[in-house]
Image 1: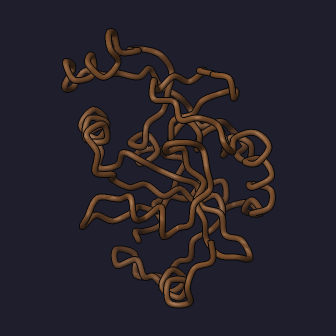
Image 2: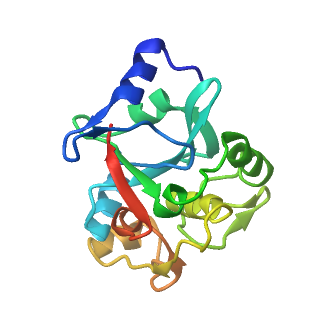
Amino acid sequence: MRLNALTALFIMLLGVPQAGFAFSLKSGDILLQSTPCYLCSLIEAEEHSPYSHLGVVVVGPSGVSVLEAWQNVEQVSLGDFLKTRKSGSRTLVLRPFAFESSPLPEARDLLAVFEQDFAGKHYDEDFLWNNSDELGEKYYCSEFAAKLLDRFLPSSIPTKPMHFQIHRNEWIQYFRGNPPDGLPGVSPGDFERSPLFDHVGWI
């Protein structure tokens, strides 16, 4: 998962035009992006957000990788993560404000929790906060990120009653019946709007 030298240099020197300063990715950062799939378009419309997928950054000695729940819960290279975004779009970098006033989590600590409790689990296509199969708990992308970061934040990322009202017929078809309205959950759009996170910039 080693980045090539040019990619690593790009990330380290990436400027944030709106803020006029440079930043580097840190372990525990959230990457939000739009992904080009039909379900992703439903999520973005429902949440009034340009983002339908996210992952958690790990900066280790071998480079930058991303922990995500996509088809499964797995660790991928930053390059592979960015390949899934919609053509012409940018990836938003968020950082918990708590990490700006206290030591950032070490990459080894994030990976230890990830490997022990999350790695290899199945993606939860039903978007349920508590849902399991033969491998244990299943996760959708924002649920996984929230439950991983909750191990390192002073307070939990809050859930909300989920809703599936926009394009209602498509949601009914997707869930093969009644969508899980009102059950707790969290979306990429909730991360985007959350007061718990600083908008660091875009890549």
